Amino acid sequence: MSSDPGPIRILSVDDHPLIRQGVAGLVASQADMNLIAEATNGREAIQQFHRHRPDITLMDLQMPEMNGLDAIIAIRGEFPEARIIVLTTYAGDVQALRAIKAGARAYLLKDSLHKELLTTIRAVHAGKNPCPPRSPSNSPNMPPTMR
Image 1 (cartoon, rainbow, N blue to C red):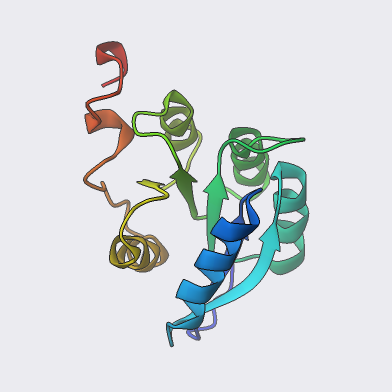
Image 2 (image 1 turned 90 degrees about the vertical axis):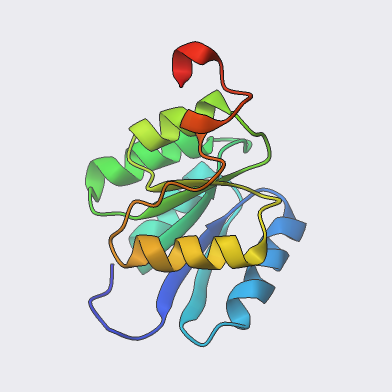
């Protein structure tokens, strides 16, 4: 994690090229953000995190080889200050709640408005733990025992 006050350095982790391309395009349009690396699974995420030490990691949960939850646990085990935002397809994803408990700072659905994603990136970078409107704890699709 950089102490440089320059652009927010972002690692994008997702097994779908279209999602990574969308994140890359969105980040490229922001003067205060820079996409520094991408990964297609949890193992690559750990390697890229070691190599680049991003300020923010955008992490998918459902990936081949190694899932995002295991990658979050590994990264946070070695770098407890890592700031990770979970991006998932499913509202009420129990894995997302587990990721938050493992140290992810925020949870957003992939279909979130780009403004919401940018706001969350900036908030987490500033050290805040935002509670997005559709967080796992208040999702109507979350089992009552998990709320």
